[in-house]
Image 1 (cartoon, rainbow, N blue to C red):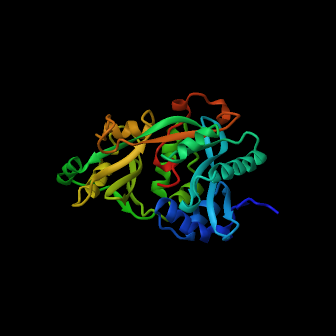
Image 2 (spheres, one colour; image 1 turned 60 degrees about the vertical axis):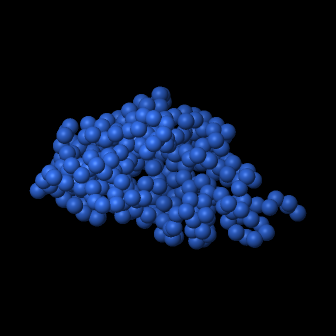
Image 3 (tube, rainbow, N blue to C red; image 1 turned 90 degrees about the horizontal axis):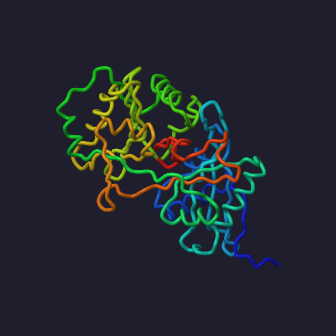
Length: 323
């Protein structure tokens, strides 16, 4: 008779309802099963790979670890890689090695499907040390960029471009601009219609889309008193001024703290925003000083033989499953 207090099982849709209270306990996020249907089943790149740890005494799910597949491109080379996501252990079951057990079982399944299996993720204060113990590497520390409310208020005195289209659902002009964004990047997720429509259907976010047809777009949402800038692109330097002024106006309202986002400092997203006056905090104290570790795992290396973290990636919020 087994004395192991936990039983590991692959994730399946019948477990999704039990992940709702687990996510609330682990992260404080209030979601329903639609969130897990979207993330783990509806993804056009394929279903998630993951495992749950079940407390054999109570039958409750004590922990979960999973990964979602994604099509990624480096130049002309394309591969399916995995994003690590939703590392969750209930507060009653922590410090019992469940994360590593679940992760190793999930990695083994992925490696059985593809010996060249490669994964990336975004570390947190508690999860990053565990990932590093299992052979993951920190490739880049992502930085927050921001526009204080005082600066956003300046846009309130400037006129709105008549060509701007504001919407709460994505349309064809937006998708075409997003695909143009991907085409100009050396490395990127593959932005086809299936991926974009799925990604923008994130149940936890109410995105607003600002489009200047043929010129630029911005996507943002409200969270924790900020306007969070989820994505931005301009066809030529300066052609995105109008859409970013609209974002500024949304962030200049009473009670707002301004605009916040994060990026790889050497990436195209960060360079574009800095041209438009976005700031970062160079100090270790004060607002927006936290770093987000971008971490990777893959014994065979990055698909396509890419080397050098900054050259192999171009990370922005659309790459993060939680935003």
